Image (cartoon, rainbow, N blue to C red; front, side, top):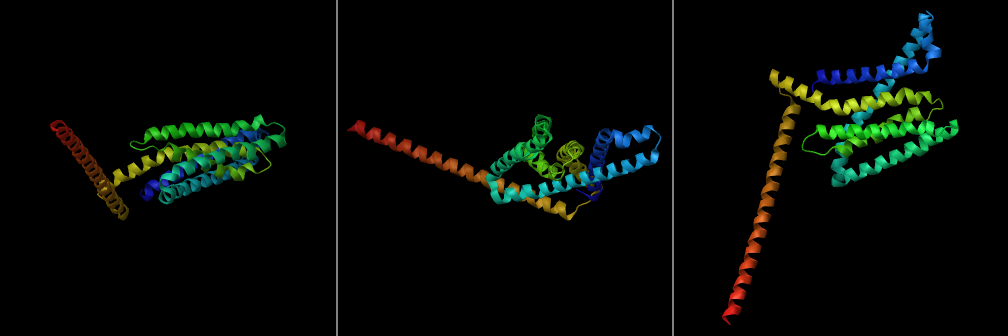
Length: 261
């Protein structure tokens, strides 16, 4: 991706997260901040608004850092654990779900005297993550990305939420969870569109970068490996067929010799 589209991707995500967090903060803090606007005390309102925007920028930045960490962890996991990586992701997802339900929101609910008043939050996170993962899986052709997408939407989101869950003031949970979920979904779904738009622009300009050359070499190597695997599979199949024909011929000769006797 070129720097132009990377910056566009970054600031679009930043704007989405900041806007959602700020709107929710204004709703939650109506008595303390938003009401100043209707009473004509603009200075007090702007002071609170600047604080909400700053907090929204912080949440958006944390979400983006988590996304780029995921982009590093996922190929690293595939390289180290290979075929076991999807199962490891499932275990981490299960751990994140248990952690969200019991260690985070159950204990918060017990302290507040309203367990089920908080349990809907992890339920919403999991349901939303499944919906986004299914959509992402339909978006990608020729590969199953449901587990990696669910891993990002549940496990990475749960990790991102930790700083906002451990505080005593539960309003921080509401200010952060919706923004983080929407930003994570946007980044996961829209990143391929930015990459494709960047590629098309480079093709129109006739611009070739070192990254493009490396991508082309990797594509050629994958094609060669796939062709070698196909030829090897075909050779094994032919070998099995020859062995089967030889066995049939041997059995046929054996039956012929028995009949002659």
